[in-house]
Length: 322
Picture 1 (cartoon, rainbow, N blue to C red):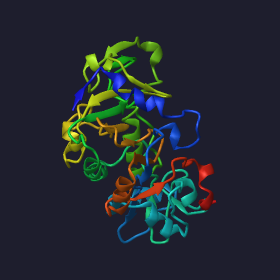
Picture 2: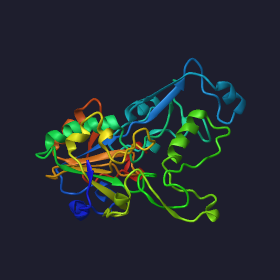
Picture 3: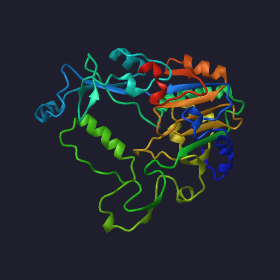
């Protein structure tokens, strides 16, 4: 994978999306034969041999320190079954989980099922590395150019690009964790570690150029501008993402660093398909052939469903979940 300043290679995407649409057409090009939605897995955890303390019970949480916790990535279908709701291709997480589900940890806390599993919301803007590799193994089988293509990374991920900042480009904010479940607190730290915003003490600082993971040349270089989003563009073979160690090849991922973002867009040189992980979405959309969508949906490692080309992935589009 290598950076390219030839951002015109992505102009075709801009020409085929509709930023005014409330459907996937706002982020995925029209004109493909079929579309699939890959659901980002939620994380769930539960204590071994005991129940979660009540939210806000500091003494109970203090006594809870050191308790063994089981944790795992799971599926939307598993969560739906646990809470007695219905999983379907246009499902939305906020309607999949009942509003009256008991919650544990933090305020208001995460929903818990009858077996004590506590569910965190799926990640937005990021497909798990191993799931991207699983999807890519199908993608490379449905293009004539598996060794030539492009990957676009959203420019807003904290610490990836250098810039004029008050502090350091890779700075993480501190936050008050008193009274929070330590596992919730850790998720907050991970989230804040991606932020480049430091609203405190600005009056004492002057903006200076701070380097990021990527070089200053890349940081100052041109962007692939799509409606509402700027992207850094890389030449990247789709076959590279099919490797289990694809992150080792990604220039924006620093070895041992906190950032491990997946690309926002991947497509082959022949434009036979496009994979889109919009930064505000909890699922990844693949546009391509009917055969590609069929193969993705049949893969047991992926929770994927075929969706229509005008699928509405907002809460309003989840009619079956209401």
